[in-house]
Length: 127
Image 1 (cartoon, rainbow, N blue to C red):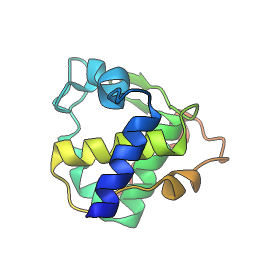
Image 2 (image 1 turned 90 degrees about the vertical axis):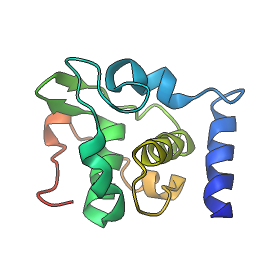
Image 3 (image 1 turned 180 degrees about the horizontal axis):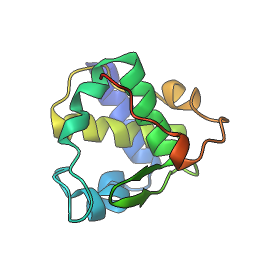
């Protein structure tokens, strides 16, 4: 638990003066509490993905490469550092009160270099 808190704190500090990456990058479409802002979806349904290897890989690919959905195109954020993306996913995990280990920069790094398009990022059948 202390390691997770340390990773979250370090990731937030890396974003500059404690700037909240969720507010800066996600809240305008997905809402302050991931509830969704029309026409963009709420994210409560992705909570179970934090607890499975396939789901965690999917979440990493979405933040790196984006996702094409019914509401349009969610951009990817591959330009951000691995630490920043781990902090972002850990914030979402906290918002959703999802089970699973905290994301690490190493886990994000494994998803890089695949050069996927948003169409190629597919949601797993089961979380």
